[in-house]
Length: 410
Ligand code: ADP
Ligand code: CA
Image 1: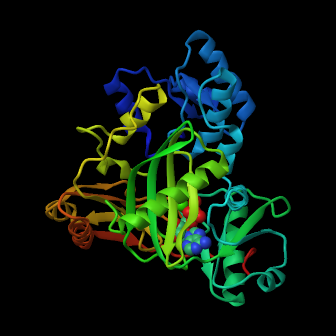
Image 2: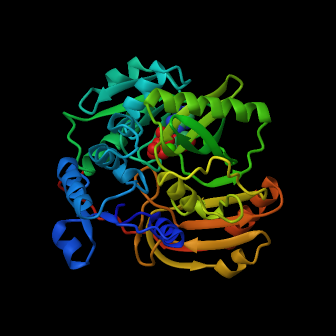
């Protein structure tokens, strides 16, 4: 896991309650790992060295399974599992699930419906690219997540602005324009859903299907509300599951959790993305399987070889909102949490943004203000409760006085 992941405590607690001994491999420089007594400090950017460190560790204390709790180490986990002869996705499948260009190439080759796409270099001339693509389109980076850098453009003028904005973001993240490509693909209209699934020897088990009831029409694509069970017709849900199974096979994903996002319109489901991990943030909090098993426990049981495919999500409706950042600035205060928590069906409000820290909205930002959780009743009631709770919250954000960069100003 990476030090900043939201997913750490859910997995560590699940391991503890199962009586499994978990060794946390953390993306940290070795000196810091020693200082903080982290047993297995790893540099995720140095895959070969990290695999070596894991293998050396396993010689003393053998592992039953190695899994990445989020996207940050899926490829490393695949290489380490391979080196130790443990069940896992192939490194190539893990890479494809993180690289949006490879993903599109494999999806289209494997017959999973997905947008028409093209890749371009960051140093390509935007005026030229603008003549090569159709509109509306979506511009996106290959390897960021959380909708960072994903921008819709409806015409060449909007495209140029979107392209320059994505380019600035990637360069600020350390990319070089000469060895970086980006993706431009058709904008797919329709409603959006997210499927949480589990693969066993290539066979997909749907754990749950979420509707995303807020329209996601761009130009930026902030995640907001997820509600399950889906209100889409049974037949559509079936088609979605088949589409995800086809996409998993196309990428070569065979085992462990998958989190897929799709659009659905008159033509049927379209794959946006499939990741070889479970749902992000604190969203899994609302999920329960069998009699009270959390998602992380289910995933760990599966990883150590237990049969969990017969477990079903409990019957209640459930939902979560990733609270969007309304504007850039410094978070000075959060009000109304108690009122939000008092809304019927609301099971929790968790503010994860830190006071006095900088808030960066999309498309550049990478986090949420927090989460609102709800359960019970129908999906519509859960959705209404979440919206009502969100209305109770007020965020005090002090706008930054822009610092003029005279030298670099254009
Ligand atoms: P990320 O990995 O950053 O989440 P995605 O490719 O999933 O990137 O894009 C983020 C969001 O942008 C999607 O959930 C969707 O709402 C929107 N989006 C991305 N690509 C398309 C597309 N081709 N058509 C319509 N919406 C899209
Ligand atoms: Ca996504």
